[in-house]
Length: 157
Image (tube, rainbow, N blue to C red; front, side):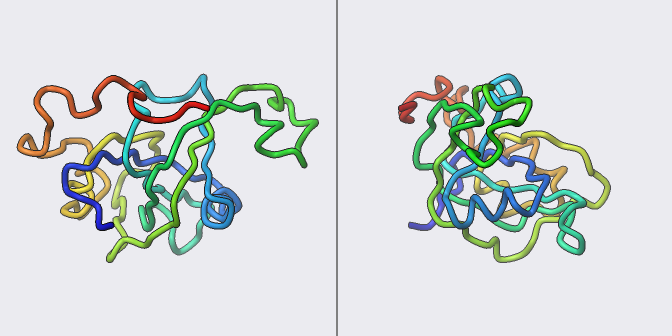
């Protein structure tokens, strides 16, 4: 199904190519509970790629539908890193549909450091620079409440 302009999008940073591969091949992305944005609920997750991506750095190139949210430990997510210092920390595991490429990459001409951006799919389609994602058009807002009540309607199993 084609995303609608009013669909909620959370743009999340991806620091390592390995994490984008996990999203692509295993269908999930992780967010530490302690660093999660207040507005975590969304219909889609888009990925802002950092300098670690070489020529594809500082841009949003792909997105995926969010299927559900679960709270798990890092150890459950990455059992091969069971001795990691944050192995017992709790994370949101965001289960995703297949990754899809944007028709054109969305660059960040000057912006380099972000954590999360709450926006809409319409804004993602129209933007020419990542900086334009922070202010969705007023006609796309669903009343006064674009994000609803946090995680309402999403599974936290």
